[in-house]
Length: 156
Image (cartoon, rainbow, N blue to C red):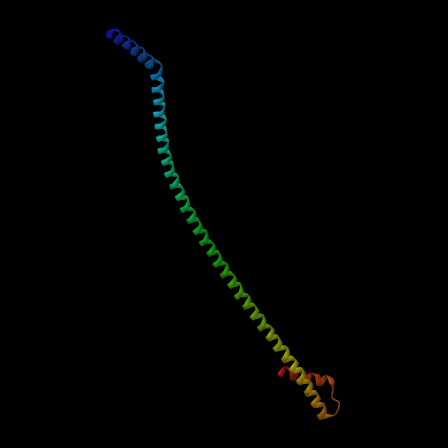
């Protein structure tokens, strides 16, 4: 065997192998690596965008929560104010009703006093008539007697 021929044959095989690899193997391999690098870059960009979106969403959620708390506190304050107004109105109505009942009771008491006085006058007049009848034991003119009793009632 000749060393030059072996070296030359190995060189020819090497160049043929290099050409096959450079033509058929290397371009798909480089293309796959480029695609993977692109996917990784897209994934990193998407992750960064997601992180930014998450921060924005967190801020919005915090703001919405704060708004909800403020609105809840405002509604509670309004409810307390309405309850206080309602309580004041009920108290006022109760005081007005109590005043009306007291006035009505005073009016009824005054009417009962007037009725009692009238009844008492009539009884006093009757007693006076009976007393006068017993003292006089005689018949007196009924009309004159009634006029005297009416005058007596008016004086009492």
